[in-house]
Amino acid sequence: MTDSAPIQPDDNQPSPGNASAKSQDTGYRRYAILGGAGLVAVAVISLAAVLLWRPGEPSSQPDHRAVTAERTGSPPDRSPPQPTIRLAASPVPATAEQLQQEAREVAETLRSRFPELPEALHVVAMLAAQLRQSNEAEELWKKCIALSPKREAYYVNLAAIAMDRGNSELAAQTLQQALDAGCASSAVRHHLAIALNNLGRCAEAEGVIQKALADEPQSPGYWLVLGEAQLKLGKAAEAETSLRKAIDLGVQSPAAYFALGNACARQGKNEEAAKFREQFAKLKASQPLDPQQRYQILSTAEARRAAVTTLCEAATVHSWQKDFLEAERLLLRAIALDPAHADSCRALAALYRGAKMPAEERVVWQRLVEIEPHSFSNYLRLAKVCDQLGDAASAGASLKLALAIWPAAADPYAMLAQFYLQGGKASQARWYAQEAVRREPSAEGYRFVASTCRLLGDTAAAEAALAKARELEPGSPKPPPVSPQRP
Image (cartoon, rainbow, N blue to C red; front, side):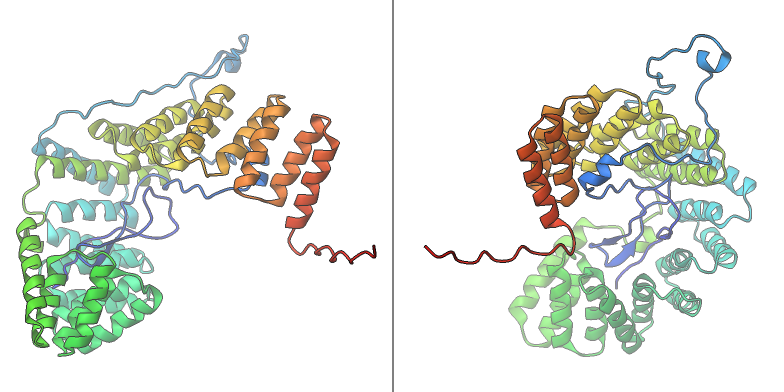
């Protein structure tokens, strides 16, 4: 059967990695970990956005910068502020028992401080689920639902752990409760279909998962659940089509190949059935743990992941409750346990951004560039914070590295054009601006090119750039066709 596991909240709350992901191996949705202040998703920005680029809006977070001479009345130091942090470069040694104990202490502190806050109880429930304390996790998620009945992830978490224990009846009831509460997402329907399949209510499961597929037709896990339901209903040909679709979209679970082998065998396709069963055996051998054993014994690596996750999630809750120092402490500790944990780093960068601590934020973005060298947004964020610190040279260096890695992207060229213009280097600004509009033509971009041309005294080039801008303006009239001239 298709298995299930706890997921995380997916709402408008800021949290690193809060984009949902579908597990292609198990056929159900897992939400990213609830953490700091959100994965930094930097969309492709126009040149106009670059021109209007300013530091972020003031935050409600207090300013936690150290007292300087400027604040005490002494002569101000105009040099860029120095960071007050350093990040661990290698993981701190710890045993599995020590890591589990630390995670428990963090979770219990959170529960004692915020006993009626569902986000805090969710952190405790997630840890309990990972430590195989299913009864405690179930009770905590039931309380989360009572406190926040519109948060669908709490229902799905409760249902997932119930199915792990083999209690699909509780899972189905919980997910139906979610639908009745207005949480009618495809994720809820997906998990409900899994529970209904487990209960043998396959006709209902087929109808439920088809509604989910109407919303997300490219979800491989949904096709897997549909194929399993159809197979149990005796629709072998339809099941084969659905299961092949699931595998084509990326599912690589033993359940998919086992079901597909059976679907082929029922149609007399014995050679194909044998091939799929062989693949099932290979995958099964490489995945020895079943859902009942998944969290039975944590290895040191798994205990470390659980501890880092708990620290990061707890930091988020403390940040929401305006406890900057505890949030910072937890995130720095999470990074000490796993210096390459990107979610903890992004959460810490967001925390410092909200507290107006650009020197510290810069340290974190430098780490993110190291551990995620192919993330375009990391270079842009690093450049932005360097510019806020008055270090235009480092900002420019970050952007030049970005355009070396992504030569077809317009953003680093546009931002470099802005930096050079601010520095009074109009010639370089024009070159980068021209490269930006060559990659991504826009009216704003051509107007910027025109402004650099005017600064250089090139009136003809400025007029040509403005003409291009007018052509690209929304709703601009097209020039009339040229009438043929008599010789």
